[in-house]
Length: 316
Ligand code: NDP
Image (cartoon, rainbow, N blue to C red; front, side):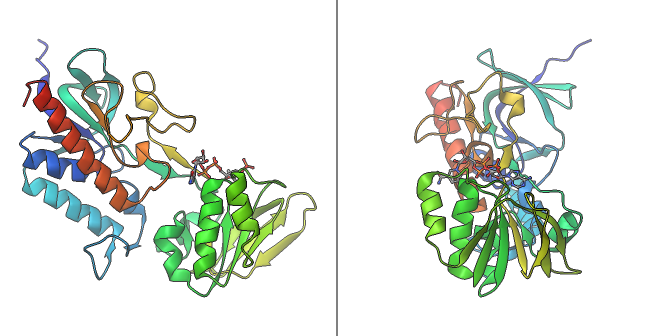
């Protein structure tokens, strides 16, 4: 005997700052939100050690602790947080259909997608170990650059993110080595101009990182010139990786518009998408800012947009 699927007013997919901020607002607006946590409860912040740039935490907080705080706050307003992974969606009808773990079918009048993104890594022998230790391997200059004030660091990448992060780091650090694997940038002309006119950035062309050295913290980066085969060790205390991010949006590709890099598109100045009742928040729809605080902001926006949309449909 097949059961009638549960009908929800507001379903939130994800469990990072965007998802939980959306949940807090939706719960307080009596939308009785259900959060489906996804494959990595807590999202990208669970990979970070100290978060010192989130307002309201004067002493800082570790990423995992901060995500526990977000969750607790959402639970305080009776958000229904469920573990599981949304594996299929069908946005054809007025009621949106979603399947959790390929099994449980849920119906939702509004959906907030906050599935996030993940940084790409190089896969160097010691990269993950030092990253997990908080030992100087990072994919976010804005988050971690502060810890390297006055020091020499290396940064990998040649796109707009890398160019932006290199110039950001150059303001804090004594010197930034920028490792570019080809003999040209991918970044826009304006960003390249800015990099080339920053005296303490040294661009190493045709250069790839081969390993990152250090026991508890970065003590050097082994690089190789891929034209000459020449290897050397850069004397640096930090390694920043800026080779792009992968938004978790594959599931929605048949239903929503995505940009060339896979980020979900939404209406200008709104979190609504081309599917009525489906809203987006956080890094799955933002390749520019990618900060916990901006994600939380768009989560709030998505909940307000969902509430107003439900009210306009006479559903709330
Ligand atoms: P991109 O995909 O544009 O660039 C990735 C860079 O990393 C490329 O230069 C690539 O090299 C390099 N790379 C990839 N893999 C490796 C590897 N294994 N080893 C060494 N280098 C590697 O990603 P971005 O994050 O820079 O940008 C994503 C999008 O966001 C772009 O459309 C960009 O324009 C946009 N953006 C816009 C900003 C703005 O408008 N202010 C700011 C930041 C991003 P190669 O060139 O050789 O392929």
